[in-house]
Length: 377
Image 1 (spheres, rainbow, N blue to C red):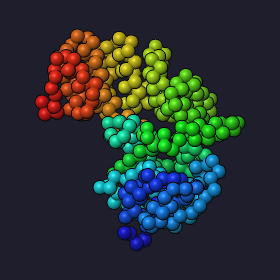
Image 2: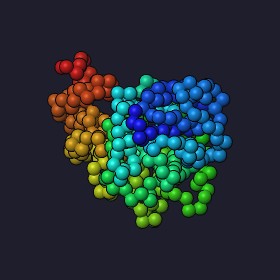
Image 3: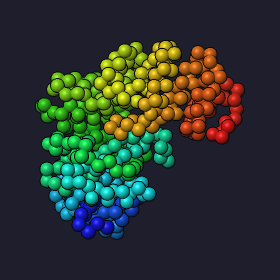
Image 4: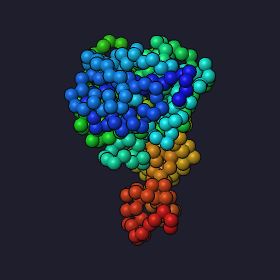
């Protein structure tokens, strides 16, 4: 390990015995100290943390994730800080690259890694995930602290960031916390709604809170309320003369698709695409809308553009498949509806070459009289 620069891992936990050992074992050999802030565990969390060499601090929970995180930052002695949640795991073959941050140039303040955010049922499946780059390493500087009682964010607004301020590291972080089992066990929906509703009562609150509240309502299946709230968020950003985040438009059109409101999504999605022209998910949603409006030729063109964009633009939260196998699948659907069965078969085969377990494409081929398929055929 580097003698001059040191790396501290900082975490907050409560009743994380199911996840914590895997998380810590994935990273303990590349950090110089582990700071655990415990907000009231009653299971084996503290024992596991101690076994793996963590220094444990107690924090009386006060409904603020940011304050709990900052309490741990104040106790870190490393030159750089890595922050994780207990339901996350560093890709072990890549973890040594985390220490590259310790030799970063003086102008560098942040380290960026790729988050793979899994959804759906167990076991984790990369083809059921969202990708996004996140700042997970930063200099141990009192100016760098978290803000926000919930969905806390590292406050970097005063840093005047440039390209030299950020080092992108070839490290993958797997996040399991929003898979169905984890959400139910932890009661995340109820907790998050309670904390967000409390924060929303504050006059002049951050429009991000409206976005996060809409996102939680969406996860709870309350689509109409979620749609109203995400529009409130977008309107508040515009009123403040700020560009609404890409996440807000992704959520807005996810809700409209879930509601089956395809006319409501067209042509308004064009405005969102003008703001974020390289965001493949927005183009993908546009393709779905056009397909549902029976504009099949136009939809195919959009899905082909998704294939050109791909899904490796780390600044956006991108659903795996929108620039690859999902785009091919919907090209197949459109071709089949146009009566172009040979082209549809080709598209479904492309889908299965990229995602062998894609059930819908396999069923589509079977319905076309093609009973057997393997990636080698």
